[in-house]
Structure formats: C-alpha cells, structure tokens
Length: 345
Image 1: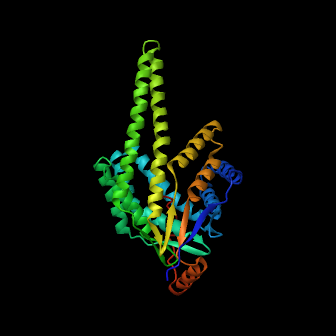
Image 2: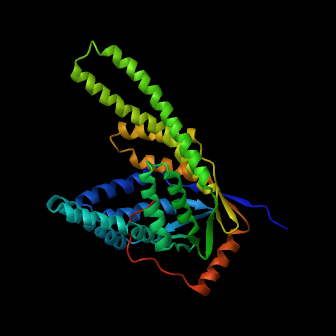
Image 3: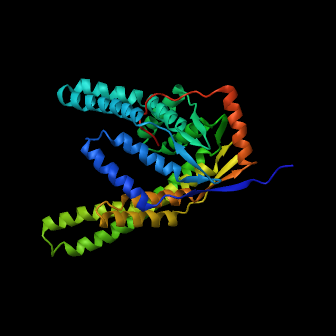
C-alpha cells in the first residue's frame, strides 16, 4: 500500500536587519584587506543563508572554509591577470592563455560543484556530486559553443543539458537526484520570453519614436541624443523587469517540479507577478538607498523563492536520514577537492 506523500515546505527565517550587520562588516573588511577577506565574507554569507533555510523543522548548513575558497580565487585571479597582462604586451600569448582558460573551465566548474555540494549538509548528512569531467566538456563547452554559433537558437538545449547534468549527478548521502524535464519545455519558455521581450520593446519603441519625433524641433540636438540614450537604458531596464521575472519563475518551476530525490518529488510554485514585484521593489529601494538596501533585497528574494518550494516526501524524513547515514557508514564518502574555484550557476 503506497503512502500519500507528505508535503514538507521550505521556509526561510533570515531577516534583513540581521543580514545587514553581516553584510556591512563583510563589505568594509573586504575593502580594507583589498579583497582578501572576501573568502571569509563568503563563508559568513553562505552559513547565514543555509542555516536560515529550513525543511521539516531542520536547517541546512555550510562547511566550506575560507582558506579553500581563497586558494580557488587566487588561482582564478592568477589566470585572468596573466590573460589580461599578456594581452596588452604579447597579444598572441594572451589569446593562448584565454584559450587555455576556456579549455579548463569545464574542469573548474566540476570542482566548484563538488566543493559546493560536499560542503552542504542537512541533519548532519552531506550532499555530493559525481559528474564526470568528460560529460562536463560536452555540457559546458561544446553545447554553449553550439548555442553561440547558432545565434543562441540552441541556448534552450544547452540550458536543459546543464541542469540535467547538475541534478542527475547530485547526491544526498547515497541517494541520487533525478531530472525528467524535456528539452521542449525549455524551448517553450525561451520562445514565450522572447515574444514578451519583442512585444514590450515594440510598444515602448513606438511610444518613444512618436515622443522624440514631436520633441525634435524644440530640443537641441545634443540634448535630444542624450535623451534617446537615457530612453534606451530605461527601455532595457523596464523590459528586464517585465520579462526576466516570467523567465526565472517558469524556469525554476520547471526545473524543480521535474526533480526527484529517490522517490520524493520537489515542487515549486513561483509566479511571475509575485517575483516581478519583489525584483521591482528591490530595484527601486536599492537605488533610493544608494545600495544600502542590498542585503534586505537579498533576504526578500531568498525568502520568496524558498517559501514557494516544497518536498513531497515519500515516507518518513527521520527514517530516510537514518537509512542514508547507515549507507554512508558502510560505503564511506568521497571528499571534495581541497579548494573552491568559486564558479557556479
């Protein structure tokens, strides 16, 4: 007899006031140390968000160390500094270094996924990532290049394969995640988002055309050009605030509604309208406060996204965790790499 799945909703208990104190200290110490403290800042930020994310009355935790993150950042900085410096002095050598960075990027991404998941835990049980390097080169190099050379017509396929690679190769204890979304669902979301962008752009462009046409005779040419430039930027911002929430909400819902952990299903019920309000109000308040609202904006967005997610648990959470801990005890767990490249999706 099959038991009815128990819906366990995610919740987020962080507050803007608490996180502001962490954020402001991180901000000033990162500046005072010329960026070195940013690794410690990341650990504090990740721990705050993870420890305030709850599922079934228990919170997640983050175990990454600042030294490991700093090593990864130094490696990344050295590579990009070499690329930029040699591009100025010896362009051919600089291009060679740039090509090397592109070629090793899939490997770096795999290290990042391994580090991030291994250092994430729930009820003392760690996550893991088992994706192969060979598959990473297909997903993170071949498919994005295919998207680029097809003028991004293949971008939905590349996006689908990236999420499938991430989710299918993720583990919680010894239990595997699975991902059943179809490529066509990604193409559909991209298509409708593009149609919305064309519609919004067309409407605002038509309105702007008639407005500036009427102003052309009464405004100096220099001021008219400046007004057109500002109008273009405003159009980009407005289009983003209208189209991006639709895209993000639909993609998150699709990805998590088609993700399972063993026999348990995830669900996501974000709405484009609700997300648009959060993003738009965050944008306005960040501008009005000259950036000081940023930590509050991060909290609002995290709460909105998490509180629209749930796990439809096939069984008892306590029994599931105990079973996984026994499996880990018997089989052991592979450790992550010793440094974090700090790249992720």
